[in-house]
Image (cartoon, rainbow, N blue to C red; front, side, top):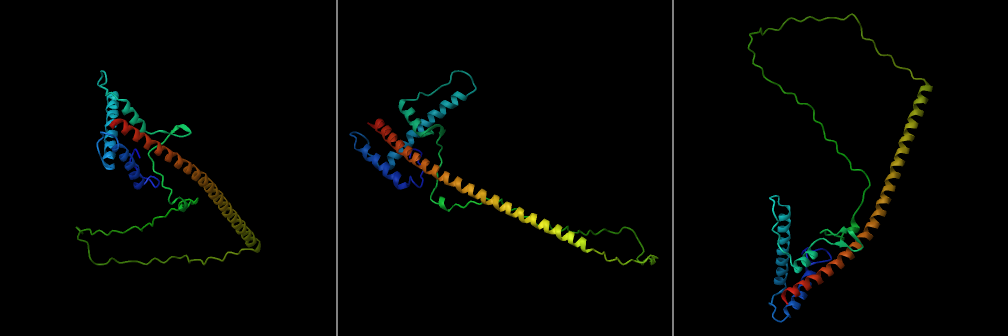
Length: 241
C-alpha cells in the first residue's frame, strides 16, 4: 500500500477501501481539512515524495567531492518514521533478508509445466555457392576460326573391378559387431531416459517446496502490508491533528 503497487491479493478495490477508511477517520477530526480518499492519497504521496527528496539531497551532499562541510537537510522525527515505512524492511524471521519490491503472481502457478529436456538446436540451411559470370572485353584480335584438335588413344584398357568375396566368418563377425553396437545404443537410450525421469522428479520435489515457501512469503507480505497501513494512518493522524 505504501508503494501504490497492486497485486492479486492487494487489488484496486482493497486499496480504495483502505483509503476510504483512512479518509473517514481523518475527516472526523475537528479542524482537519475535508478531503476525499483521492485527495488524502495524493497528500500521502506528496509527503513521501518530499521526504525522499530530502534523503536524496543528503546523499548527494555526502558523495560530493568539492570539499568542505556537507550542507545536510535536517530530518524530523516524522521524516524518519516515513523513511522506515518506504524503505525495504527485513522479512519476519530473518533480519538478513530484505524484502524487495517484487510482485508474485500465483494465479496460474498450477499450470506451469517443467521440462527437463535440453533445448533443441535448429541447424540453418547452407546454400550452395553462386557462380558469377563476368563479361571481359576482348582487347586482342584473336582468330575466330577453331583450332585443330587431336585425339590421343591410350594403350591401357580399363579394368573391371573384381567382386570382393566375404567369407561366412567375416559376415558373422560383422553381424555380431552390429549387434553389440545396437545393444550399446539401446543401453544409452535407457540411461538417458532414466536420467530424464530422475531430473523431472527432482524438479517436481523442488517445486513442491517452493510452493510452500511462496505461501509463507505471501502471508508475511500480507502481514507487512497491514502493518504499513496502520503506520500510514498514524502518520497522517499526527500530521493533521
